[in-house]
Length: 243
Image 1: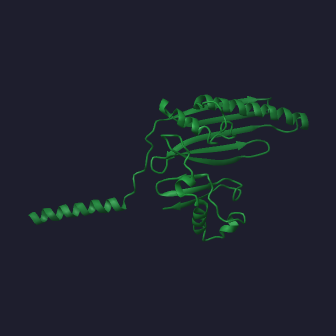
Image 2: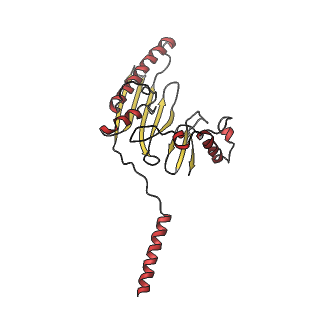
Image 3: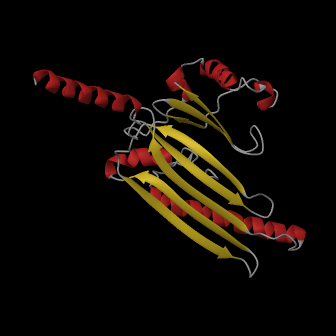
């Protein structure tokens, strides 16, 4: 009887080990409170000409994250980048409204200029959509992804993603140099070239050596470089190095 009990227990224990080895890892989740600053504006110049701007900017909720949110708004996640050199303390809700106001003002100025020089022949229908979100990064770090879609009479639709890795305690930007040292360009360039060993890396990078872009996603087990449209080819390209 004792042998049968031990055998049953051993089988159960081995099954647990196998399940742990073969099962999927539980997905990492954010542990910080997240809010959204939203603005949506439509301005019409006439019945056929208009500018539509929609922004959803993710931020960390709570007074203690004031410095972090100020830093986020200076990281170029909103394009055009109006805030990187601002002397004012930036607050998400107010900053998003100001971003939309300035973009609309630029649109009105551009519309007036084009109509004066081209006698109203140009159509000025502009659309700008920006949506940012947080995903878990390496260790306690967080990655903010900004998905941007731009469309106007001369450009678009153009869609691209900007990624920024940051420390949620300080708001400090996490850079490749911080993580991989002063020789990161050489080291990571070599790893990218190895990743592209099935193709000509020099050709893929426009005749130059493979290089790491500062537009990247850093997690506990991988590093993904995001090359925006026009950087390597007409579409976005992502290259992931796992470790």
